[in-house]
Structures are given as C-alpha cells and as structure tokens.
Length: 231
Image 1 (cartoon, rainbow, N blue to C red):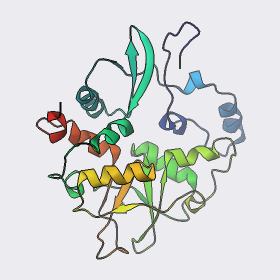
Image 2 (cartoon, rainbow, N blue to C red; image 1 turned 120 degrees about the vertical axis):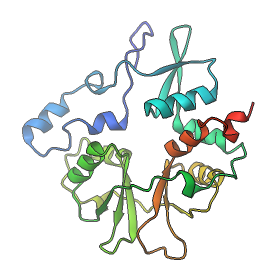
Image 3 (cartoon, helix red, strand yellow; image 1 turned 135 degrees about the horizontal axis):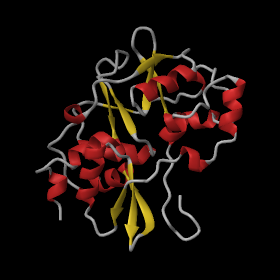
Image 4 (tube, rainbow, N blue to C red; image 1 turned 90 degrees about the vertical axis):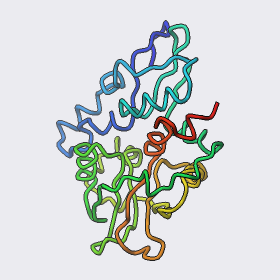
C-alpha cells in the first residue's frame, strides 16, 4: 500500500486479517471489524529488498526473518513484490534431486476434526503461527486441509461458527522420497503453497508431515545448496 506520492506505507496479508477480531460472533466486535480500514490491519513498515539484490539474498532474508514476501524497491519507490511462491517457481528450473521431501518437511503439523468450528481453526493458526490446518478423521486419515486464505471468504459473512468441513479442500499429497523439484512442480501445477506428505503404502494413516513453499525456500537459502550455486 502506498500514498499518492508513491511513498510505501505498508502491506497486508491473510495473517494480518486473521489477527483481527472478525471471527468473533460478538455483535460489538463484528461491528468494530466492519469499520476497520486496510491501514489499520496492514503491517508497517513492510520488509523491503532492492531490485538489484540476488534471488539467493531474498531467499536467505525470508528464511532468517520468517517472511513470506518482500516489497521490491528501486530508487526509493516500490516496483513489485517477491514472494516465497516466486522463488519456488524458479526452483523448478534448477537441479535439486539430491534433496527429498522427507529431509525438509515439517513433521509438527496442526490437525483438527471435520466438525471443528472455524473460530477454533483460526485460533489454532494464530496461536501456533501456522498457515494451515490438516483435517483428519478420528483414526488419523487425512480428509482435507484449510489455510488462512480459505478463511477469508468468511470475513464479511459472519459465518465463523461453521465447521471446518464447510471450507476445507482435498489435500494434494506427495511421497516422502520425492525430490524437492517434484514437490515444487506439483505446487506450481496445482497453484498451492503446501503438500501433505503421506506414506503411499498406508494412505489412510496419519500424515507424515507437511511441506510448504517456505520449507523449500529455507533449503534454497542453505549455504552450499545446489540452488545457491546456480549463477
């Protein structure tokens, strides 16, 4: 977000929206969130990077500061945004077969049952700083996944008491022995930011983990990685 002179003011993401009170069913809080402006919810000042910086510098900065996007600046003016997804897309053109999904996936995933209210899901995302929740059956079989972006559809509707089953979507899965390039290609193909890692021999068992665009970028930023050696 910029003012009339082009001066950068801030940036707003789905996480910024989730930290508001919009999921409360209390009429006072709902009325309050309905009057809030973007300037109130945005993160300011936004994290920036110069346009002539290398992609590896951007990846390292995102990993170090736990950022999902950087505003690109040129001559003190914002000229674009580079995100984790942009860096993952570039990974598809490099060789990373020596690394597997199992080596970089997150094993500590946040799960819930299909009848969990969206209010509880949003609370779990905020408290655990997680951008997604995996929906499982009582025996652990994964049946869906929900992200902060999915919850935005309920921002105005005031329907946050609905169960997560109303908004979840089927998870896209990948095997732990798959390469990071395979994972990146699959994310790009399906336009998603995360894949559920499952044992293909036991697909109905508890998922093994979750691999996201952030996990891949963290690997890309590692000193000595194949990606960083590409000129």
